[in-house]
Image 1 (tube, rainbow, N blue to C red):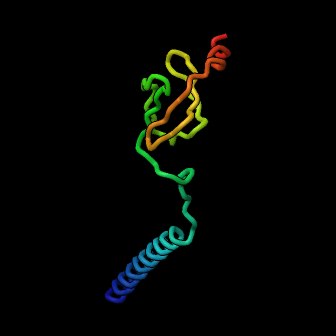
Image 2: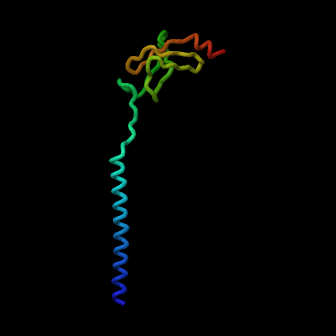
Image 3: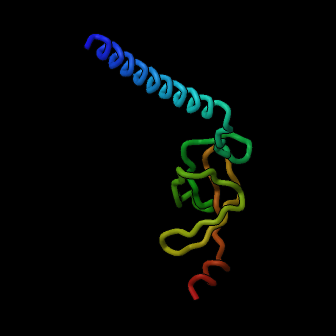
Length: 111
């Protein structure tokens, strides 16, 4: 009877050691995979200063047209206001973008 108990303990110990070794091996592969595989890099966009938000204003009367917080505003960007007026950004200084009213595109849109 005594010999059977020793074999049973030995079997449990071997089984637990195999499970423990497999877990260590899996963890090692996981962390090695994270280190060796290239991580995707976020595209920061064109060089230059990035701001948390931009204020787009009408260049003629300095009326605020829009606040933009999700993307960088560049010269040439276009926007349509709530009253269906079409504007084109003509100048960006720091986080202030100046937009020019585009009457032709506004008329085309209203047709």
